[in-house]
Length: 503
Image (cartoon, rainbow, N blue to C red):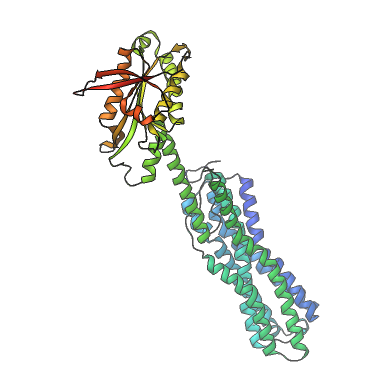
């Protein structure tokens, strides 16, 4: 099934019939409660002759008339489920279904109680004369308290059904309620008021209205009815109030466990439902943020992406200067290799090679900023902190050479000889670009020198060339071999260069 609103049904005819029957059974359950209440009353009053008429009136109103009324209330929802109306057209009806149903049942209950109270005066036959005489205050209280009880009972019964209906719609269409007319505090307050104060009020009225054995009879009747009413209502009240909170709590635990795929149905029409909707919106935002981070991390090193996301703002990293170690790699004779291989074989071999080179850099705390053809540009201590950045870069370089030595890559099994240049010194890092096109980059003489040293490997027959500042930053951890001084393009004087044995 697909979402309604475009002529497509949400549910099959049998599913719609099942949802309608469940709603109607919940709505007319007040008739069953009324039969129990009437049985208690006639048992205490020993007025069994009165029971058939009283129950008949209750069944006519709370079962017969109520079925017709509630059937009409459900028609718009049924039309949505069958694809004849959009969700937006019926969302208000779905949200207000508990209130509308409860109000109509309460009105029917008022008519029913009014008939029972007035019957002994309107039809003074033997059946009604057998009933105990009630005071005016007691009758008025009965006309107020019983409809209020039925309103509360049906409201929470249909609220519990609303969770089923909304869950079904969410499962089929992904649609959730966005209109919230209920108030959780008001629901809880009414529930507590009706379930506790209503029986107490009836008892107090009995104490003030009757004397002698009549008081005991009236109190016993009201207490018995009150206890049964509370028992049958509390289950639906707490189920209606607590189930949405439990669903939300379980979802939060799932997210806390790292699962961002969770999305839950909005099953209540109050602040808890609104909070559930906001939770879904928050998770969608977190999921999008995670997807952006994952996608961003494929083009920008994860640490750079993480730094930009953590700093927030407009996603721009302001320029800063920091001592760092820069590492450049390149493949010797790559142009010749590229001329001999088909493009798919070439890129397959190159990607496998770059993945091999990337791992040691990350393992030692480095950040890969960009891939430059067959090589890459990495840094240590910018932007990700790496306190011992010079020796970390050397360790990464040695591991790279060991990882690629004697190995071939891709389907064509191509060997790649790697050249590496490393330099340490002040580096400027920040975002550069224009408009919406930005890139994080590193600038400075240290960067230029590392790039020059990588190319000088070709002249000296080496695989790793290191600047003097990098050697000084490593202390005595490594043994470097000096290669003298050499002129470097872009510098007026010569620089001392060093190499290291990778064995």
